[in-house]
Image 1 (tube, rainbow, N blue to C red):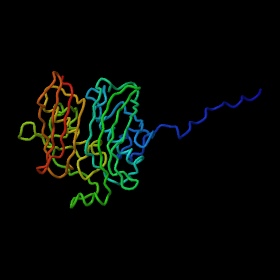
Image 2 (cartoon, rainbow, N blue to C red; image 1 turned 45 degrees about the horizontal axis):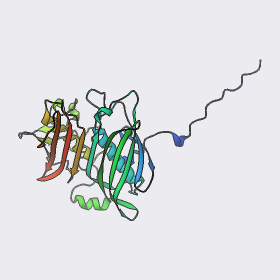
Image 3 (cartoon, rainbow, N blue to C red; image 1 turned 90 degrees about the vertical axis):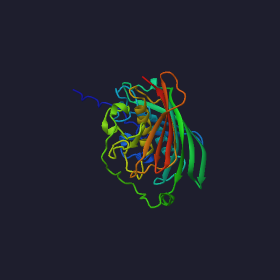
Image 4 (cartoon, rainbow, N blue to C red; image 1 turned 60 degrees about the horizontal axis):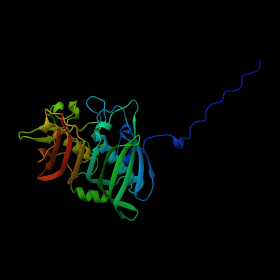
Length: 312
């Protein structure tokens, strides 16, 4: 009997063509599971295509019933896109600090459903108003759109300033500039059902004795909002406060944020009270809410935000 011929095995895939996330350091994340971008292709000095993937199940960026992606996942994806482009395309070294002055997004809520597979996304990015010191960008604006299976699901953009470690130390004055663990204080948060959340640990607001005013009191150990330590409240914490304040204002109705436009004016310090205030816009559409939200600390306006979305 002749021995059987050896079976042919398929060639191993080219490692350079395998899909993986971008380096977590490029998007300022500590946990690999919180990195939503997988690649970037440069088309010109200002235009890029980025690829990414949203998970089917996420502990934070998911609708209450688990059937849809949280619209604020768009904001986090935009934030990561800006940082990735800065570090990989605009010459910004790791270790530099970013000031996010603006972030805006709008989504097609009916296109954020979670399917039987993770959601692969493609971002079109255009960087404008780029300022430089030598070969390093010191500031830029970006416009972004997100497509899923060729269909537009979100659009928006933001504006960043880049600061060297030495300048950042001077800017922060006597405050520590190294990353620190936020102070842990007792939290008497709003009920999750009034904030668009299902878990107490995800609530970032506590009641005050003034109507439609709340204290910013996020859980400093939250694995997503404080994925990495910081010397001030991250911008995504302030965006989450925007959503929760709008939901608290409109309760008992359910408000889903379809779009948020935010201007950031100052850092929100970790160790001082920060008050969040929500008001109805002057004009409203039927079954649709427009809410203005502001954050104040030490008699300064920390951020201003406008949220719109359907009411049910």
